[in-house]
View 1 (cartoon, helix red, strand yellow):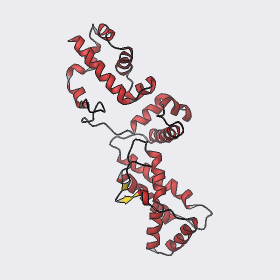
View 2 (cartoon, rainbow, N blue to C red; view 1 turned 180 degrees about the horizontal axis):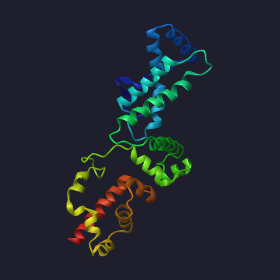
View 3 (cartoon, rainbow, N blue to C red; view 1 turned 90 degrees about the vertical axis):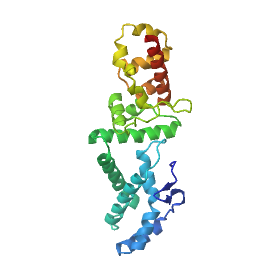
View 4 (cartoon, one colour; view 1 turned 90 degrees about the horizontal axis):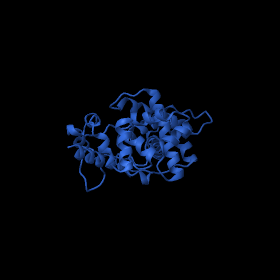
Length: 258
């Protein structure tokens, strides 16, 4: 389910599964104040927490200890407030509690403040993305997600970008061993500022030396203001490939203009 097997010192591959009969018996003991029964019930429902967390993570992300702990807090709240007299399965009651706890954590813990409505769109988009990727065994395109949600492409793209973690300046620009360039390398060089070289009168001649795809990427990135994610979706290649081609194209243009 996740790349990380050990969460908070727990081997998730060895988590137990409780039968409905065991769940009912333990819940009866919990309502009588049996703390040992409560611990067994919590441990036996951690797989439920993991399944809920899967909605908030893409296939390429690892589950963090903090997020797992927050999910467990939601699980404990569900146990404490569950009414055994109602004819409702515990999981049916617990899932919204766990989801709510995780959403509050993500909203309050984010380094950037994003509106609740935008976050709701982002979470829905992530669920649709996971569904599309699971069914088709490929990366989902933003156009597909937007169509499924019946929302404008731009709104979905912005929502997904809004909840993405900010990139570190030490983040590698190209994900292979042959190039150690980082994000800070690309912004620390004044000559790489697109506003300066776009205004250059010889820019048209410089663009002529580029391959059609590289030229298209630069136009989309610096003339149309699209993100690398949007470019990758439109062209049909990965974001890492867009980053690599963009960097190579900028190097060619800068050398041509010098």
